Length: 546
Image (tube, rainbow, N blue to C red; front, top):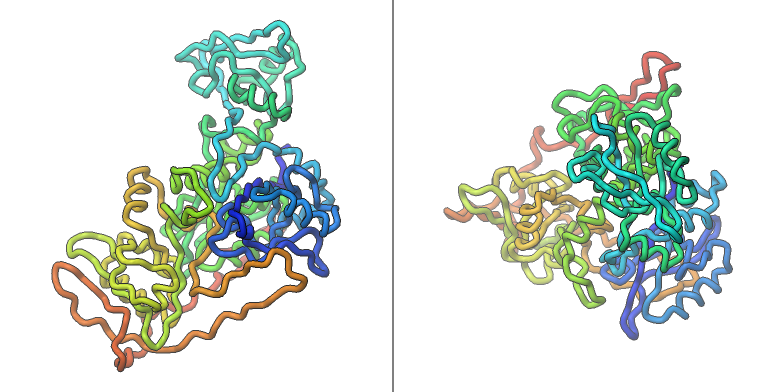
């Protein structure tokens, strides 16, 4: 069956005299070797390491039960490059509670594509292929090769079902409907195909990938595969909460395993994001929810605040993934990997900026000098961009730069909003402003590739906050707290009329700023959770309104 625990493989490299940019520690009341204080822009952050991650393996050695000093020694002995296998905090604690063997989980996905300071290596993958029988059958033959283990798919009809599903001549068959068949003979495999009815899922590997894994002495499994050939796709829905919430119920039905989307309000954020009735929820912000109780999933969505990203599957897609005995999270991983590769097409080096070809999420805290930038637009064209970033201002410290294109303001996409609307949104944000911005070249690249520009492209979803002293130590003896500085309250003046054809709002007030008008009753109010309603019958399941 598909695993509910998904470790990540991260490869970190550093230069002489540089640290990996994180704390490795143990803490009272918590199990495992914890990652803490991930340094912004350091090798750890670039590779995708997150605060609270637990280190399971160092260079392939399982260390979850090792003494902490031994784990530190392994990292130090590794020199300028080290490979970690890590698990996020929630999954780690769930695995411990349910008694899941993390050493076995580490073996289950040993070939997960390692990430080297944020860039995935070109490792070949086996492939999952879903075949639905046509009038002429599946369109392939099975053959064996003397002295070679396993069965091979041959005589693949170029216009047949198998070829359209991604099968190629001489692919070796590894699994059939999730069952390993490498030791099965011709008759046994034929019987399994017939027993599967009118559809079947193959895990196959081509010669190049087969040679790679055999040289590494790695046993292949479905969890390592690419899912790009599967015809039915899970869906990634990005939701921004409206005045009435997200606009759907989450239901857990006792007669059917899983958490399901129900009763979607027409025109709601859930409706606009493409959610459908009886979609099964697989993950929230990339974290799997299959093993969680209904109340835990509800709380996870609520903790997302104003924005959440849901991975869902409809019934047909769900059935296909269950037939393959793999998790739809493979699709999430592949999409996130493709975004990362698109964002950084060149091989990264330790000196390369981690933000290159990616959007940036910038948090600005207003001072007496305002935010410190101009918002410009070209009359008659959609979109706004940043100009005249004042040196040393909140905008400068948060990472804004001239000609950055504004994608989101406080979590709301503004690409198609008017200049006046965006200026008003910024004015109403008070003393704290969150902006998702991107450089023009990267903007053009993603638009050409038809890739939506969202926080998911950032990978680690880190916010560019006002600069704080970087943490360099590798292994502190006690936790250090770094309280955020209190923001200085100041009002920004109303912008002067912008010249034509360039529209410009000055978000850097003069030395004696005029006080802004008090917020009107039309100002956005704090988003509130929608009322909780129980299902009409307790036997149906649990409902929660979002």
